[in-house]
Length: 221
View 1 (cartoon, rainbow, N blue to C red):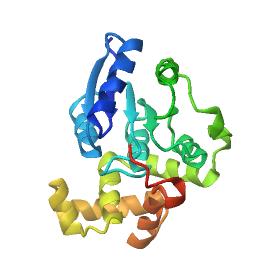
View 2 (cartoon, one colour):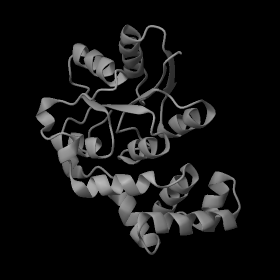
View 3 (tube, one colour):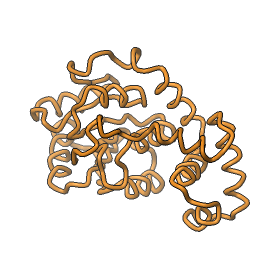
């Protein structure tokens, strides 16, 4: 069976470098590219679950852990390898807590990227030693948040994500092409699964996915 790989990064030249690295490990892989989170969502909806996603944390429309949390909650069989300019150990540990199978800073030598791809494809994990404790010692609060997000259906996740961004029910319905009554049902179910009572508390849950200034939000790529 052909291995399906998705590369999600907003820089064309780096997508090309990632494609070359993947091809060196998986010469027969079917590789698709997404320049942003919206494109990643479209690929995930249009095709069978990919085997591997190489994900940049700092794309313009997804500068947070939300895309990672979404992938892990909605595509649990897909391994996610983070490839990002951010090399802060705190960010790497949080990526572990949210379910990443590996993390490669873009400052790493090419052989590290190839090794990470090979390890993750073989169902292993690959993280820089500088990140410190592994996933089992990652912050409990982040792991609990990841578990709650994983309980959401794909549509519930998207509705709650838009709600947390300040969109009204009517606006969410228009964004997703569904009825407002359906939005209300998803909101009610989402609030219950997240263990919160209202929109404000739901927004705080999604705020926990943001990468703060102290976690090097200003870095590109």
